[in-house]
Image 1 (tube, rainbow, N blue to C red):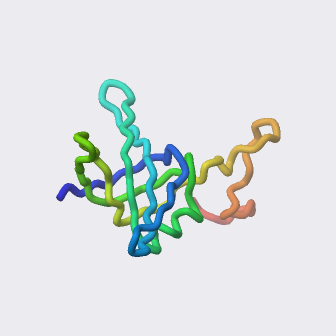
Image 2: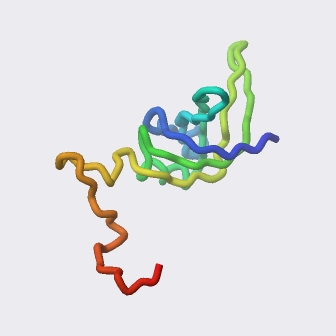
Length: 124
């Protein structure tokens, strides 16, 4: 078994299916960038199963950043070989739209998790 840990962005929305026995199947593709002498991009087809995969559809879509862990599977279909990652764990990265960018003349918004307090009493 080949274990894979990767980071990338979804290239399309999740394709949802249900198997004959009622198991939820989520299929999607992730673009993973890596660098040698120049930028390279690998597109990896991914698939997840069950309730967790069903919940992914609520939180991620095309362009969402994800960090994933799974195992590689190579299968044959009609004389061609396909490689896909069977996802065991998936964490959500940044949303599709950057929350710090707005259409107000290029000004950045204050991060919603931090208040704009006067921190002059903090020693660092």
